[in-house]
Amino acid sequence: MLKKFPSANFPGGVPPASSDAGERPASPNQNAEQRQSTYQPALAQPPIDWDGCDRLGIDKIVASGKHGVTEEERAVAQPLEIALALKVDLRAAGKSDDLSDTVNYSSVHKRVVQIVETTSFKLLERLAGAIVEALFEDQRVLAARISIGKPARLRGATPTVTLVRSNPRVTPE
Image 1 (spheres, rainbow, N blue to C red):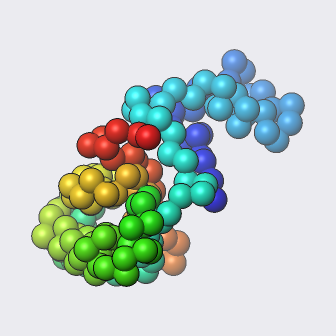
Image 2 (cartoon, rainbow, N blue to C red; image 1 turned 60 degrees about the vertical axis):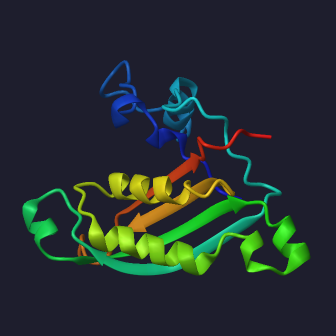
């Protein structure tokens, strides 16, 4: 089951300020409770129900691309690590045993690598959005979750961006 992290979805990316800057929360969860109560979704999409749905996933995709805020970061290709999960109805493929009845994960892999290697964005968020937009061209992809990490950026720590989106071209059932 995918975890939800509503605290990362504040307007402007900033949590609401406490009434007293020096005030400590009464409980460790107080700030989280405040953030959840003020959460306003950025998109008017229904929540994605990942429980009980079919998924196609690809983990550990490694591709090099020129992505980063500074010109120096974009001057030389850096390795990126990508993991994705696609919500897809796999019933027809399960019955037919025919590749044309499913989303071909080899084609998905090639498309992801192609986008990473041939585009250049300042933010991983934009790169992830471009990948999701391309995957949504196939209307069999009902929703997507993509994580992109930049392992060479922070001396052993890997910053990661994760997007979860519904396909706007598909009407929810």
